Image 1 (tube, rainbow, N blue to C red):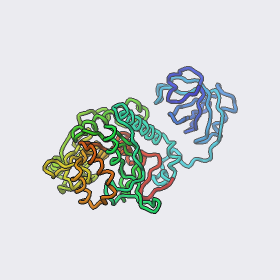
Image 2 (cartoon, rainbow, N blue to C red):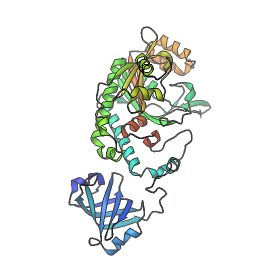
Image 3 (cartoon, rainbow, N blue to C red):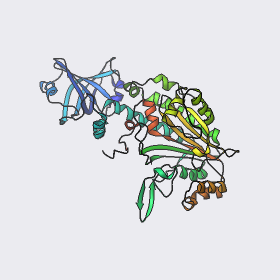
Length: 428
């Protein structure tokens, strides 16, 4: 039987075999303690001179951090432990004695840790963050799979821009130019008109020359699209979706949240309904509270943080000046406001969702494409969607890394993805 640390509480007083790596060792004379990790968690292994052969007890002197071992022992209760149990060791098989490990338990600089990201993943807090990332991904897929959505994968190579031409990564594509996708949205619109409700979930690329704690050049985004949905129905779905993710993570990741010392009460408060304010309301809120803001501009990080400070839940900002939004966004009847919505996370984590209702009229969409200076030929297939069975439809995109960062309470987005890509980092 294969045993893992995260399941040991079910095997109290049983003899088990654990395969893993040495995380830390400490000694108090005739007893030494080894913290073992196996990818599912961390556990204290007690090595007592009276319980093991002399050769096993002597391993304290030769085992190094990240040495690989197989531990045989008895699961016993330990109420002081994060997982409630420890291992009374009977035998240790050494698979490999690791060389001197470059990442010790002391503090290291960020640049050093990022250079050694392939090893830093083994640390306790990074373990917790990426296990939570896994749980968030699982919760996202479960939500859409259980609510009638069909997964329609959008391509990574595209011939057109989605979010403007200034942040495109261009590449040669068999004697023509292609771009790494900024978003899978346009293809999901095709999917929604075929299947009703679809989503894609994959990497997106933005060549933004930004070094903030909230930006990556490669990030993951989930993008659902729904036929016969207006802006309000879209917002209803967004808040139900976010509430579902948070609830699932709280239920499945108590250990990881505890490792990160996350204030779970703040997450438990994330229940619908969420506050909804218009762009005009948000601008007034800023200006009335001494935060000068020019009407018609998009909100920057300081603006978002100020707005979020007035709420303890994600705030949904809707009805934007159309100049701030993309060409595909439908406008209100007065032709002044775009029917879009941004969701700003609490605690200063910024925008985690952007979406809205799409323009469904063919002639108006042609006009918008021209106004934005985009090549009409590249959008011929997209315009076909307005010729053959066009209906009101809406959707949104959620940035995975920002969402994970908010849930975990991390101080930088680079900790929320296994191998981050930024302006200055392409390795490891």
